[in-house]
Length: 406
Image 1: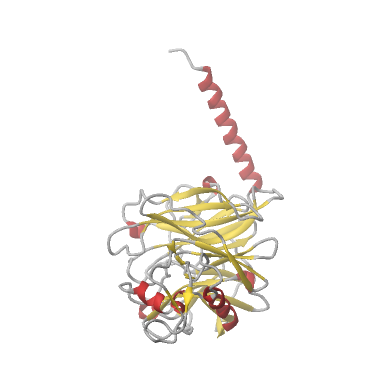
Image 2 (image 1 turned 60 degrees about the horizontal axis):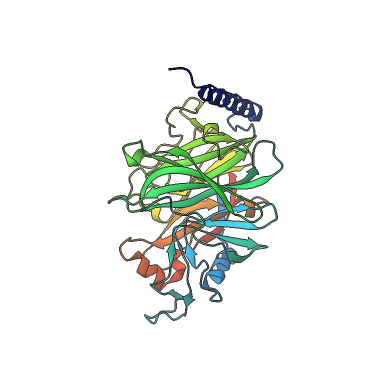
């Protein structure tokens, strides 16, 4: 059969595109120092205090009954500062609708939500000058298919492509699918990256960067994006596995890195395999889950004065209430800890804290602002309880100060 000239042309185009992309990556790659800093030293939490003002702002906005299609409660709290100064808050499972009372129908002094209130898998709320203003049309990220959903996690503003003057918002997404027990929070399937235009925050595209469905054991699947750190021209993206699906924390921590401007390019992602950064091998844990160590599936990392500090719920029975930390001189570790934990305030009742997240946009002058999510402890009947008392499903905030560890 004679050669099809169209095939030869397409092959040539494909080769050209490969060479061009390779050239872009080579010219865009930042220095390769693994994010290390000569000023690194052990760090631990010196003190903490409740941030009642920020916690109260979410309570005010959630209780506002002037609209029926806005945020009234949610978890998976993440934030990113936009170029115009606004703060974009991203949430996973979210209640919309209206809040009533108090008192609630049980005669208790709690504001409450009707049991018919809409529940969506993700939402986004805008804040300006410390005041929450509006909820974007929810869900912001549509379900990828039947019995599947997307949870937004960390986000950053970066160039549309390396060197571009145009900025976009890149949002990491976790894709999960309904599954049997013990996968009560869904079976992890993939990490995606959404690109949002600025300033209108329109979802332009969603790209799958790491498909985990070929990994047969769901507990070994790794989802990236619980937190990220920008350093030296790289975006370091941390992730975790589900470990034991019903325990917290029972996960190991992993890290990938991506050159600035390329979060949405799967081929630009490099994963730490225990010895080197690679695009092909399975990532290896930088912090292993153990009897007294490990992370929740959602944790946070911040770089403070040259030291990387990781915040997570504490291992063991304290993991339902106490926050602890680890430190390292590089995103790849070794990670030292856990340090002494602290227990932030919780509403009364059988409740649990989870998903501690540092909000760098609100931090500074030696302090860190950290949020933690609150939910009913038992999954059976949880919806009824958090509708009965809307304060049970909203983020709470604390201000932390770090000091050198002794």
